[in-house]
Image 1 (cartoon, rainbow, N blue to C red):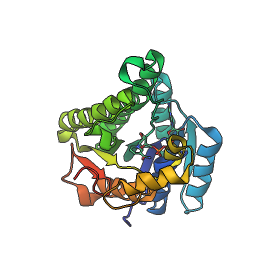
Image 2: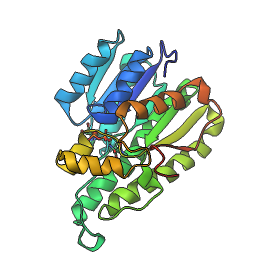
Image 3: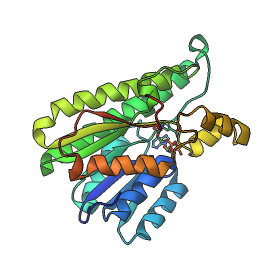
Image 4: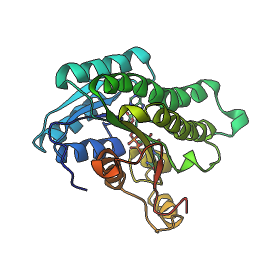
Length: 252
Ligand code: NAD
Protein backbone atom coordinates (compact mmCIF):
# COMPACT_ATOMS: atom_id res chain seq x y z
CA UNK A 1 0.00 0.00 0.00
CA UNK A 2 1.45 3.39 -1.01
CA UNK A 3 0.64 6.50 0.98
CA UNK A 4 2.48 9.78 1.59
CA UNK A 5 4.23 9.88 4.98
CA UNK A 6 7.00 12.36 4.10
CA UNK A 7 8.03 14.38 7.17
CA UNK A 8 6.26 11.93 9.50
CA UNK A 9 7.93 9.84 12.21
CA UNK A 10 7.07 6.20 12.95
CA UNK A 11 8.15 4.22 16.03
CA UNK A 12 8.12 0.42 15.74
CA UNK A 13 8.74 -1.96 18.65
CA UNK A 14 9.91 -5.46 17.87
CA UNK A 15 11.33 -3.88 14.72
CA UNK A 16 14.34 -6.19 14.48
CA UNK A 17 12.42 -9.12 13.03
CA UNK A 18 9.31 -10.45 11.33
CA UNK A 19 6.20 -8.26 11.28
CA UNK A 20 7.95 -5.33 13.01
CA UNK A 21 10.76 -5.24 10.46
CA UNK A 22 8.30 -5.44 7.56
CA UNK A 23 6.30 -2.56 9.07
CA UNK A 24 9.44 -0.47 9.67
CA UNK A 25 10.40 -0.93 6.01
CA UNK A 26 6.86 -0.15 4.84
CA UNK A 27 6.89 3.11 6.84
CA UNK A 28 10.31 3.92 5.32
CA UNK A 29 9.12 3.12 1.78
CA UNK A 30 6.25 5.55 2.31
CA UNK A 31 8.66 8.33 3.33
CA UNK A 32 8.44 8.25 7.15
CA UNK A 33 11.50 8.45 9.39
CA UNK A 34 11.65 5.29 11.47
CA UNK A 35 12.63 4.59 15.07
CA UNK A 36 13.29 0.88 15.52
CA UNK A 37 13.13 -0.47 19.09
CA UNK A 38 14.03 -4.01 20.08
CA UNK A 39 16.13 -6.09 22.47
CA UNK A 40 18.11 -7.47 19.50
CA UNK A 41 20.83 -4.92 18.69
CA UNK A 42 22.45 -6.38 15.54
CA UNK A 43 19.13 -7.29 13.91
CA UNK A 44 17.68 -3.90 14.86
CA UNK A 45 20.64 -2.13 13.24
CA UNK A 46 20.07 -4.30 10.16
CA UNK A 47 16.46 -3.08 9.93
CA UNK A 48 17.76 0.49 10.19
CA UNK A 49 20.22 -0.11 7.33
CA UNK A 50 17.41 -1.57 5.19
CA UNK A 51 15.16 1.41 6.03
CA UNK A 52 17.91 3.89 5.10
CA UNK A 53 18.22 2.10 1.76
CA UNK A 54 14.65 3.33 1.12
CA UNK A 55 16.03 6.90 1.18
CA UNK A 56 14.79 7.92 4.59
CA UNK A 57 16.33 8.44 8.00
CA UNK A 58 16.14 5.72 10.65
CA UNK A 59 17.60 4.95 14.04
CA UNK A 60 17.81 2.00 16.43
CA UNK A 61 17.10 2.35 20.15
CA UNK A 62 17.83 -0.77 22.22
CA UNK A 63 14.70 -1.23 24.33
CA UNK A 64 13.09 -3.87 26.51
CA UNK A 65 9.43 -2.85 26.33
CA UNK A 66 8.67 -4.50 29.67
CA UNK A 67 10.90 -1.96 31.47
CA UNK A 68 9.25 1.38 32.28
CA UNK A 69 12.48 3.41 32.30
CA UNK A 70 13.59 1.94 28.96
CA UNK A 71 10.29 2.81 27.28
CA UNK A 72 10.36 6.33 28.71
CA UNK A 73 13.91 6.72 27.36
CA UNK A 74 12.87 5.31 23.96
CA UNK A 75 10.15 7.92 23.49
CA UNK A 76 12.43 10.71 24.78
CA UNK A 77 15.19 9.67 22.36
CA UNK A 78 12.80 9.52 19.41
CA UNK A 79 11.49 13.00 20.21
CA UNK A 80 15.03 14.38 20.78
CA UNK A 81 16.10 13.16 17.33
CA UNK A 82 13.01 13.67 15.21
CA UNK A 83 10.89 16.13 17.21
CA UNK A 84 7.66 14.09 17.23
CA UNK A 85 6.04 10.64 16.94
CA UNK A 86 3.23 10.52 14.38
CA UNK A 87 2.78 6.74 14.30
CA UNK A 88 3.55 4.08 16.90
CA UNK A 89 3.36 0.38 16.11
CA UNK A 90 3.51 -1.46 19.45
CA UNK A 91 4.33 -4.88 18.15
CA UNK A 92 7.06 -6.48 20.31
CA UNK A 93 5.93 -9.81 21.67
CA UNK A 94 6.93 -13.34 22.58
CA UNK A 95 4.94 -16.56 22.35
CA UNK A 96 6.38 -18.02 25.56
CA UNK A 97 6.82 -21.73 26.21
CA UNK A 98 3.99 -24.21 25.66
CA UNK A 99 2.50 -25.87 28.75
CA UNK A 100 -0.88 -26.69 30.21
CA UNK A 101 -2.31 -23.97 32.44
CA UNK A 102 -1.72 -25.80 35.72
CA UNK A 103 1.90 -26.50 34.78
CA UNK A 104 2.72 -23.06 33.38
CA UNK A 105 5.90 -21.74 35.09
CA UNK A 106 4.97 -18.62 37.05
CA UNK A 107 8.07 -16.68 36.00
CA UNK A 108 7.28 -17.34 32.31
CA UNK A 109 3.64 -16.35 32.87
CA UNK A 110 4.89 -13.03 34.26
CA UNK A 111 7.40 -12.60 31.42
CA UNK A 112 4.80 -13.11 28.65
CA UNK A 113 2.34 -10.71 30.31
CA UNK A 114 5.08 -8.14 31.05
CA UNK A 115 6.31 -8.01 27.46
CA UNK A 116 3.10 -8.55 25.52
CA UNK A 117 0.56 -6.66 27.65
CA UNK A 118 2.34 -4.38 30.12
CA UNK A 119 4.79 -3.47 27.34
CA UNK A 120 1.95 -2.18 25.16
CA UNK A 121 0.55 -0.16 28.08
CA UNK A 122 4.00 1.32 28.87
CA UNK A 123 4.56 2.24 25.22
CA UNK A 124 1.15 3.88 24.94
CA UNK A 125 1.69 5.70 28.26
CA UNK A 126 4.69 7.61 26.92
CA UNK A 127 3.66 7.79 23.24
CA UNK A 128 0.29 9.33 24.13
CA UNK A 129 1.93 11.94 26.38
CA UNK A 130 3.96 13.04 23.34
CA UNK A 131 0.98 12.83 20.98
CA UNK A 132 -1.03 15.06 23.33
CA UNK A 133 1.82 17.60 23.31
CA UNK A 134 2.02 17.62 19.50
CA UNK A 135 -1.75 17.57 18.87
CA UNK A 136 -2.39 14.01 17.69
CA UNK A 137 -1.06 10.74 16.37
CA UNK A 138 -1.95 7.16 15.47
CA UNK A 139 -1.20 3.99 17.44
CA UNK A 140 -1.49 0.39 16.23
CA UNK A 141 -1.02 -2.48 18.70
CA UNK A 142 -0.29 -6.05 17.66
CA UNK A 143 -2.75 -8.52 19.12
CA UNK A 144 -3.47 -11.81 17.35
CA UNK A 145 -6.37 -14.02 16.32
CA UNK A 146 -5.78 -15.40 19.84
CA UNK A 147 -7.03 -11.98 20.96
CA UNK A 148 -10.46 -13.38 20.10
CA UNK A 149 -9.98 -17.16 20.13
CA UNK A 150 -8.58 -19.52 22.71
CA UNK A 151 -5.60 -21.75 22.04
CA UNK A 152 -4.27 -24.68 24.05
CA UNK A 153 -0.97 -24.63 26.00
CA UNK A 154 -0.27 -20.89 25.61
CA UNK A 155 -2.61 -19.42 28.23
CA UNK A 156 -0.60 -16.27 29.09
CA UNK A 157 -0.15 -15.53 25.38
CA UNK A 158 -3.92 -15.83 24.81
CA UNK A 159 -4.62 -13.70 27.91
CA UNK A 160 -2.12 -11.04 26.82
CA UNK A 161 -3.52 -10.82 23.30
CA UNK A 162 -7.13 -10.59 24.60
CA UNK A 163 -5.84 -7.90 26.98
CA UNK A 164 -4.38 -5.88 24.10
CA UNK A 165 -7.80 -5.78 22.41
CA UNK A 166 -9.35 -4.35 25.60
CA UNK A 167 -6.50 -1.94 26.23
CA UNK A 168 -6.78 -0.69 22.65
CA UNK A 169 -10.50 0.03 23.10
CA UNK A 170 -9.92 1.79 26.44
CA UNK A 171 -7.15 3.99 25.02
CA UNK A 172 -9.17 4.78 21.87
CA UNK A 173 -12.11 6.02 23.96
CA UNK A 174 -9.96 8.01 26.40
CA UNK A 175 -8.16 9.93 23.63
CA UNK A 176 -10.77 10.04 20.86
CA UNK A 177 -11.24 13.80 21.34
CA UNK A 178 -7.49 14.43 21.23
CA UNK A 179 -6.94 13.51 17.58
CA UNK A 180 -5.31 10.24 18.65
CA UNK A 181 -6.54 7.04 17.02
CA UNK A 182 -5.73 3.66 18.58
CA UNK A 183 -6.37 0.35 16.79
CA UNK A 184 -5.13 -3.22 16.90
CA UNK A 185 -4.16 -5.71 14.22
CA UNK A 186 -4.94 -9.39 14.72
CA UNK A 187 -2.52 -11.38 12.59
CA UNK A 188 -3.34 -14.98 11.79
CA UNK A 189 -0.45 -17.37 11.25
CA UNK A 190 2.28 -15.28 9.65
CA UNK A 191 5.52 -16.83 8.42
CA UNK A 192 8.12 -15.12 10.65
CA UNK A 193 11.01 -16.33 12.84
CA UNK A 194 8.44 -16.72 15.67
CA UNK A 195 6.65 -19.41 13.64
CA UNK A 196 9.95 -21.03 12.64
CA UNK A 197 10.85 -21.35 16.33
CA UNK A 198 7.41 -22.80 17.09
CA UNK A 199 7.65 -25.42 14.30
CA UNK A 200 11.39 -26.02 14.69
CA UNK A 201 11.59 -25.06 11.00
CA UNK A 202 9.98 -28.41 10.11
CA UNK A 203 8.55 -28.05 6.58
CA UNK A 204 5.90 -30.72 7.21
CA UNK A 205 4.59 -28.90 10.28
CA UNK A 206 4.61 -25.64 8.32
CA UNK A 207 2.62 -27.35 5.55
CA UNK A 208 0.10 -28.58 8.16
CA UNK A 209 -0.22 -25.03 9.51
CA UNK A 210 -0.83 -23.75 5.98
CA UNK A 211 -3.38 -26.47 5.23
CA UNK A 212 -5.36 -25.59 8.38
CA UNK A 213 -5.77 -21.97 7.20
CA UNK A 214 -8.95 -21.07 5.27
CA UNK A 215 -6.86 -19.62 2.43
CA UNK A 216 -4.51 -22.63 2.43
CA UNK A 217 -1.33 -20.70 3.13
CA UNK A 218 0.42 -18.68 5.84
CA UNK A 219 0.39 -14.89 5.73
CA UNK A 220 3.46 -12.76 5.09
CA UNK A 221 4.82 -10.02 7.39
CA UNK A 222 4.29 -7.58 4.50
CA UNK A 223 0.55 -8.36 4.45
CA UNK A 224 0.29 -7.31 8.12
CA UNK A 225 2.48 -4.25 7.49
CA UNK A 226 0.11 -3.18 4.72
CA UNK A 227 -2.82 -3.14 7.18
CA UNK A 228 -0.73 -1.14 9.67
CA UNK A 229 0.09 1.46 7.02
CA UNK A 230 -3.58 1.79 6.11
CA UNK A 231 -4.62 2.18 9.76
CA UNK A 232 -2.02 4.96 10.13
CA UNK A 233 -3.09 6.70 6.91
CA UNK A 234 -5.76 9.37 6.51
CA UNK A 235 -7.76 6.72 4.69
CA UNK A 236 -8.57 5.34 8.15
CA UNK A 237 -9.35 8.75 9.68
CA UNK A 238 -12.69 7.55 11.16
CA UNK A 239 -11.31 4.22 12.42
CA UNK A 240 -10.45 3.99 16.11
CA UNK A 241 -10.84 1.34 18.81
CA UNK A 242 -11.12 -1.44 16.26
CA UNK A 243 -9.36 -4.79 15.92
CA UNK A 244 -8.52 -5.58 12.32
CA UNK A 245 -7.99 -9.25 11.55
CA UNK A 246 -5.26 -9.92 8.98
CA UNK A 247 -5.73 -13.63 9.07
CA UNK A 248 -6.70 -15.13 5.73
CA UNK A 249 -10.19 -15.81 7.08
CA UNK A 250 -9.21 -17.58 10.32
CA UNK A 251 -11.73 -15.61 12.42
CA UNK A 252 -14.53 -15.90 9.86
P1 NAD B 1 9.43 -12.21 15.76
O1 NAD B 1 9.93 -13.09 16.83
O2 NAD B 1 9.94 -12.35 14.37
O3 NAD B 1 9.56 -10.68 16.18
C1 NAD B 1 9.29 -10.24 17.49
C2 NAD B 1 10.28 -9.16 17.83
O4 NAD B 1 9.97 -8.67 19.15
C3 NAD B 1 11.72 -9.69 17.88
O5 NAD B 1 12.58 -8.85 17.14
C4 NAD B 1 12.05 -9.67 19.34
O6 NAD B 1 13.42 -9.47 19.62
C5 NAD B 1 11.20 -8.51 19.83
N1 NAD B 1 11.03 -8.53 21.28
C6 NAD B 1 10.77 -9.61 22.08
N2 NAD B 1 10.75 -9.26 23.35
C7 NAD B 1 10.99 -7.93 23.40
C8 NAD B 1 11.09 -6.97 24.43
N3 NAD B 1 10.96 -7.33 25.72
N4 NAD B 1 11.34 -5.68 24.11
C9 NAD B 1 11.50 -5.31 22.81
N5 NAD B 1 11.43 -6.17 21.79
C10 NAD B 1 11.17 -7.46 22.08
O7 NAD B 1 7.84 -12.43 15.76
P2 NAD B 1 6.67 -11.86 14.85
O8 NAD B 1 5.94 -13.04 14.33
O9 NAD B 1 7.15 -10.82 13.92
O10 NAD B 1 5.76 -11.23 16.00
C11 NAD B 1 5.53 -9.84 16.11
C12 NAD B 1 4.24 -9.67 16.88
O11 NAD B 1 3.17 -10.29 16.15
C13 NAD B 1 4.22 -10.31 18.27
O12 NAD B 1 3.53 -9.48 19.16
C14 NAD B 1 3.44 -11.60 18.05
O13 NAD B 1 2.81 -12.04 19.21
C15 NAD B 1 2.44 -11.12 17.01
N6 NAD B 1 1.81 -12.19 16.24
C16 NAD B 1 2.54 -12.98 15.43
C17 NAD B 1 1.90 -13.97 14.69
C18 NAD B 1 2.65 -14.89 13.76
O14 NAD B 1 2.03 -15.85 13.28
N7 NAD B 1 3.90 -14.65 13.46
C19 NAD B 1 0.52 -14.14 14.80
C20 NAD B 1 -0.20 -13.30 15.65
C21 NAD B 1 0.46 -12.31 16.36
